[in-house]
Length: 292
Image (cartoon, rainbow, N blue to C red; front, side, top):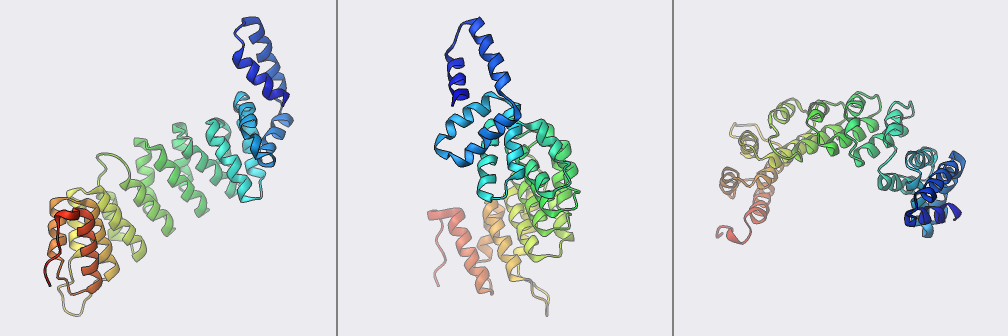
């Protein structure tokens, strides 16, 4: 409470000599044990959170380090969430988090990667890219999401590499990351990954991502997948055709809408229903289904 009052008085003080005394006092108070105690109070006394955050914020990197220490040591998920949110609010502690990326404990590296992504710490781009080769899937997943949030041009090759990861969830996350980038993203890496993919669930995610890209090559592939199989004794997986229909609706280009209209009388009931829903969503009141 005393520390908090000092922080408040320092903000209001305009006298240079008094300001200097406040700075020295805050520096002496910002010891690891005291800041650790303040961090613990975030969980114990949530009603006084603003006071605790004011002290930790004034302590700068030392306050962030105290929060990181508690985050690593916390055993309850709810406690970790409190410390996680506080760190994001402080927007500090990047040097410590970068060091934590090399921690042998998977959960420490994962939490550090997630925080760096939330903080949009661009200096973490290189270390996060290296984490895409981590042995633990959960760490690779967090690194992929973090790189997506950074949005830097140099992070693109790392995300493209994640399209080949051994874990299906990471491949799907990488596809979503590519599709959410703004402007000029090529569909080529995603198309190549789709050709090599064997998991139908991942293929579905790739097709929906292609729809968000909405480039001519992406739409062309979606149209090809959505078409019924024309060879005898061969039948396409309905779920993939439906995913392609959803992708065409996401694309919303004239070519995509023309392809959807051509599928209104498809032999597959599920595909017809997906087309009806897609056209209604993409065109709205301007489109009416054909008369039975």
